Length: 288
Image 1 (cartoon, rainbow, N blue to C red):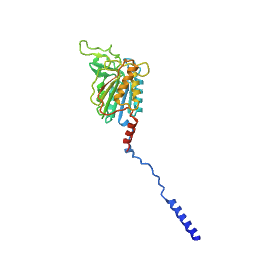
Image 2 (tube, one colour):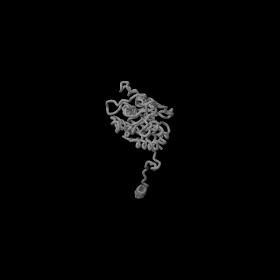
Image 3 (tube, one colour):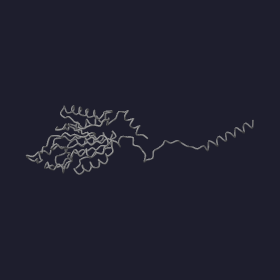
Image 4 (cartoon, rainbow, N blue to C red):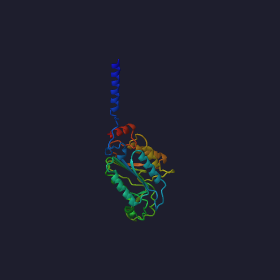
């Protein structure tokens, strides 16, 4: 009996010693080094430049562009775009911002540039107007304004989709003061001229070429309100997005304004807000 007690006590002592010195290790989740961290969101693949020019010095301020640009920039940011937002740019500032955005957009899958402000067409060429424009003469345009085509040129390094959205088809306040050469070929038309982008480039006008966009009665234009509304809908492919925006603006303006899209979309689906299944699959593929 004593032997049984002795060996039982010895066994328990050994067990206590073993447990006391057993290595205390806790399995921690693997962590990627900072240099290998993977960004699973779409911001690295989708970039946007948003410009709202409202404080025109020679023509008086516009009511909507500041609000529209802020609203569009906020929507794009929530949807995962890496957004650059700028307001009330002079001509040199606009040139600099476009140059910087070219560097930022290089290598992105999708780049979008949105401009709200004054624009005009002269001899079939479209121009975006900075806030410091004066335009005493039509010949001043190359010095004081930005060719609309230059925006697309700055997106040449984008891999798949280059998109420009222009809410600049307003009444030209400089027309009366511009000295147009009499007897020449210079003509200034209402709105903007039609364009022919190449494959992978899309230009979306707030109003069809040769027509005027309306500011509406609220703090935001009908076009900007429609853009943001349909951007935020799940699973709306980009082609359908254009149709839905057009329909909404036609309804809001009693058929007085028809947005228009020019260009050729690549043969794949693009979404501002992908369907839930597509978004989940994209995140899973992005994880290491």
